[in-house]
Length: 406
Image 1 (spheres, rainbow, N blue to C red):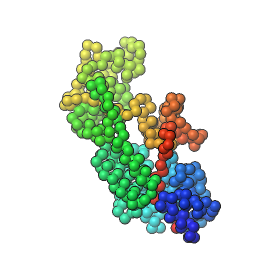
Image 2 (cartoon, rainbow, N blue to C red):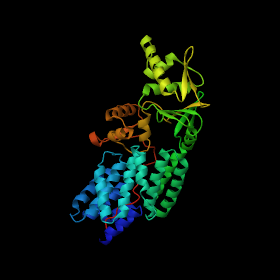
Image 3 (cartoon, rainbow, N blue to C red):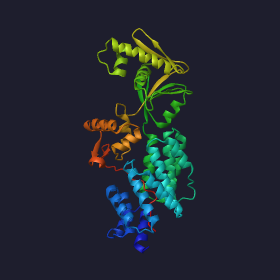
Image 4 (cartoon, rainbow, N blue to C red):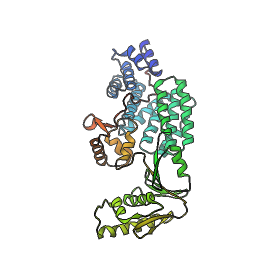
C-alpha cells in the first residue's frame, strides 16, 4: 500500500474524514475509492458514499476478497444508518464469513455489531442479545468497544434495565474518550440523552405526568395494575395479559383505566371502542359482547362491574390502576416514535420495524405529512421519511471502526 492510502486510512480511523479526502480525493484506484466512500459516509453524504463503495468493490481484483468484503460491510452500515432495513442480510453474512476466513477479526466483529443493531431496530431483542453475548470486546480497540457498549445499552433500554444501560453508557463514554473520535463521543452523548428524556406518560386518577425510563421500570415492578398503551398489555407484578391483537378490548380497558376509580358512561365507551357518535341498539349489544370478552380475558387481573351509567374496573390484587401511554400519543404515535431518532426511514423499513403492512404505514406517513409533522425526500423506492430537523443540529453517523484498505 502506498503512503497516501496508509495516511488516509489512519485519518479515517482517527475520525478525520476531511484529512482522508485531502489525500485521496483525486484518485480513482480501488483502495482510494473505498476510502473516499467511507469519508463521504462520515460526512453524511450517504448516496455518494454508497456509489463510491460499490465502484470500489467492482474495481478490486478477484484475489482481493477481503477488500471487497470490507466494502460490503461499509455499505451495510450505510444502509443501516439510512434505515434501509431491507438491505441484504445474506450479503453481510457472506462478507463476515470472508473476513473471518482471512483473519480480519476486527472487521468481522464489526459486521456482527451491524447485525445486532439491525435486530435491535426491528425489535428482535432475544436474537440481538444472543449474538452480542457471543462477542468478547476485551481485545478490541476502543472504537469497537464503544460500539459494543452502545449496542448493549440499547438492548438494556428496550428491556427496561436502566441500571445496566447506565453502566454500559459509562463504559462506552470511557472507551470513546480513549478512541479520541469526536463523532463517536457525540453518539454516546446522544444515546445517554434517552435516559433523561420522557419515555412515557402516566395517567392516574385523572392526572397526567411524564415518566423517565427508570420511572417506567419502577412502575412496572410496583403493585399497581398497569394498562400499558405502549405495548398494548395489561399487567400487575405477576401476570401479563397481551391485547396487542385485540384493539377493541384494549380501547375499552384503557378507557376504564383512565377513569378509575370512577366508572365510564356507555356512550363514551362506544365512542372510544367503535367510534360511534350516535349509538343505536346494535352498538349497545356489541358493547355488551365485548365487555363480556374483556371480563374473560382479564379475569385473573380484574373484574368489570356494571354501574348505573356504564362500567368500572375493579383490580383483584392491585391497590391502584394506572395507564402508561406513549409520550406522543395518538393514532400514528408508533411511526413518530421511530422517526424521532432523527434518521431517515423508508416506508418499507418502518413497516418491518412496526410489524405492519407497508400500505398501513404509508397512510400514516401521508397523514403525518399533511399535518406537517414529517417530511420526505427522494422518489419511489429512494423516498425517505424523517421528522423536521432541529435548527443548528445534525444527525450523527456511527462509523466507529472505519475499514482501512490494507
